[in-house]
Length: 477
Image (cartoon, rainbow, N blue to C red; front, side, top):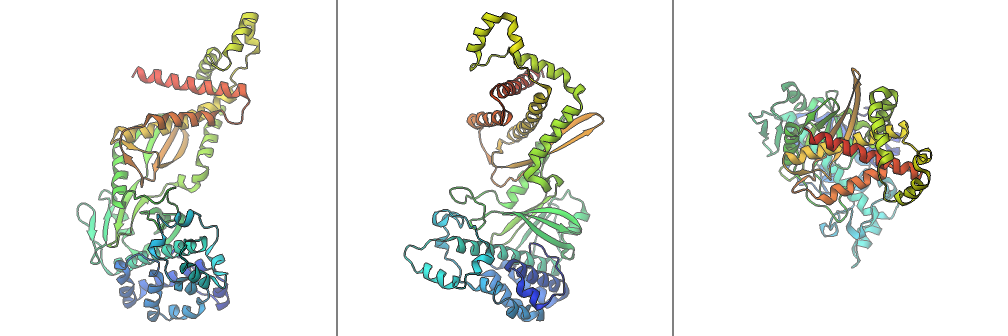
C-alpha cells in the first residue's frame, strides 16, 4: 500500500513482468476498492484489525479474502511465481532476530532487493538447509524477506483500519479520543479544524501512502499531504548501532510534539523556532501504532536542505552587502588583532622586525569569507536556539532529532526558521557539556573546511568573534 492509486486495467503479461512490490501494490489497490464497494468484503478485512503483526500475516490475509473477490482469486495463479512465493516461505523464528533483524548474525544489512532474492530458484531449499544448521544466523536474503513481509503486514493493518472506519463512524470525545469496537484507539488534536477530522476519518478520501524512510510515510488524503510515522520496532530496517532500543510510544511522541509546539516556539525578526505539527495518533490492540503530522514543504528536499539554505543565506548576504558591512568591518578588525596560539610566535618575531609594516603581510578576512562564516553562524545559532528552548521547557535533549530550515526575505528583512522533528528518541535529563563542546568543534571544522591554513584560521577567528558578539549582546539583556 506504499502507493495505492494504480491503473484498473492490465494484461496478464504485464502482471507477470511486475516486480514483487508492484504485485503487492496491485493487490492492495484491489483490496482498497473492494473495501469501499462491498460490505461483506469490508467486514472480512476489518477482522484483521486485531490480528497480531507478524511475517505470516500477509499470507493469512491473502488467503482469507481471496474467496470474496474474483479479481483477488485470479491473482493466486498470476502471482504464484513472485508475490505468493515470497509469502509462502516459512517465517523466521523470533530467536533468530536478536537483538533485532538488522543486527542479527553479525549486523550485515541487506544489499539485495526482494526480486533478486527470489531470482534464486533454490532460495527456499537454501533457507531450509541453513535453518537446520547449529550455527544458523540470519543472512542478507532472509533479512530482506523479513523486512519486506513486515512492511506488507503493516499495510494489512492499515487496510483493516480502513475497513473498520468505513464500517463504523468514529465519534471522538472532548479530548479528541475514541475507541473503536475492535479496541483500536484513535486520537486527534481537539483544537484541529472539524473539517480536517472529517477528512481524515473518511476512508473514501484516503488516496496514497508512499514510504519516505523506514518508519516514515507521506500520505495523501483528499488531495492534502500528511506525514505518518510508525513506532519503530526490532523488525524495522533502520535501528540503532547496537540493536533496537524502545523509543517513545506514538501517544508520547504526539504529546511531546504538542508540548514543544506550545511551549518551546519563538519568533524574532531574525530567527523563528517551530516544530513538526502533530495531528493525532492511532494505537492497535496488538501494539502496532503510528502518529500523524502536518506536512512541511521543507521536508521534500530534506537531504539537501542544509546546503540549499546555506547557499540562500550566503547569497542574501552578498546581495545585500550594505546590511552587513558594519558587522563585517567589526569582525575583520577583530580577526586582525585576535591572538592565534599556533601562529603567534612567528607573528611576534615579524612584528619585532617590521613593526606596523606587518599589516602588509596579513591576509585580511574578505567579505566573501565573512558571508560564508555568517551563513554558517546563523544556521548553527538556529540549532542552539531550538535546543535551548527544548531544554528550558522540560529538559529535553534533541541529539537524536532532526530539523530542516526555511529562509525568507520580506520587507528588506531576513528571517531564518528552523523546524524540529522526529521525536521518537527524545529523552529528558541534564545537559552534557561534552556534547555541546563537541558540537562546536564540528561547527568549526565545517566553517574552515577546504581552505588554506591562513584562510581557515581567519574563518575560525571570524566565527569565534561572532560568538563573542552574541554573548556580549545577551549579557546586556
